[in-house]
Length: 69
Image 1 (cartoon, rainbow, N blue to C red):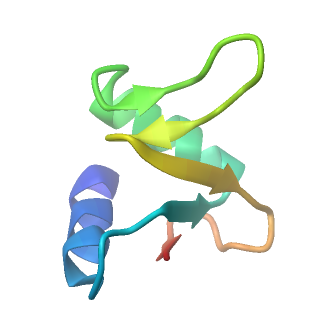
Image 2 (cartoon, rainbow, N blue to C red; image 1 turned 90 degrees about the vertical axis):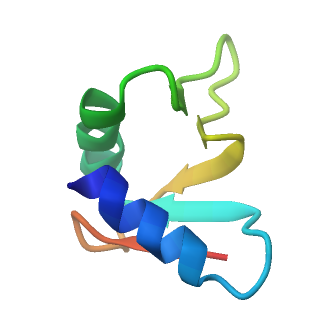
């Protein structure tokens, strides 16, 4: 369900998204749902990505929602 919501948000974007902002808990829930196939946890320096789009985690975003820019 999270993955579907995020895909809808990405497709609604008027241009190619360069960053997704989400709550840290949402990131881990999405990773559980989508699997490591689409969610990369990075290596030594954590660069989180979803299908190649950079993901920033913030407690300012409500859990379960996304901001796509």
